[in-house]
Length: 280
Image (cartoon, rainbow, N blue to C red; front, top):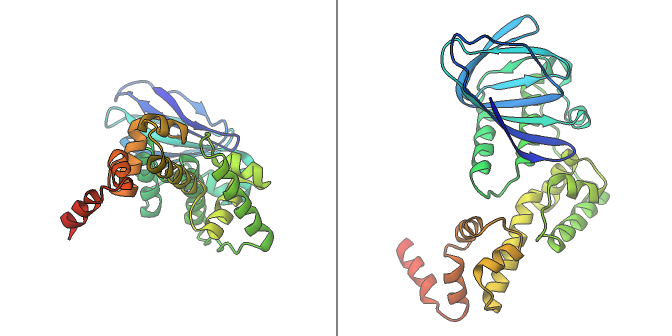
């Protein structure tokens, strides 16, 4: 078993687990340290939990409750891969679902959860327009809804909440070159990450991470059009982790590469015209 931590904050940790256990290997008991939801992205395994046994396949969720013992088996195929979200107690209290839901042991493949699991996989693979922490909160929220049958109430931000969201957007914009996660922005706003995610999206129309990426893109576009600074330097200065992430994200947004965008901003309109002609 290998474990790789992909994201960590005070309220949520995301890790990837890869197990190579084969049929016939002796299973052993384990214990959940906290609340968790593990999306099975590949392979299959069985799980003994609270006197029950589950077979989990790709698309299913393994559900963890603090202190509960469990034991995984591999009776049919060799190995599996899971993307696991570990949640702080306070976040689970806010999201809800109740003890029976979090002690369910597993959830079969459900469309509304599978699509988010695959979104999380995509986030892992590239600089996406949403953060792993945001995906984690939404998976937990949809899990609670699926488990209880109670729909989440639509957020109607108060004047105070709208002010918080706007002030947070300004703060994100001012600090977009730095690593900012949902917990950082929520702390600035003085609310929980889950509540902040919902009120920000309801007020601004995009998630905090989407706004962060777009702020970086806006600054990069301005510098590309006004300066002769190398593209690589602009990528790092505006907060992108590496040049390939920046190039891919910018090209997806602008329709042309950063270099061609710079050329177009200096008067070479043929670049955009060629693109229009290709799609005309």
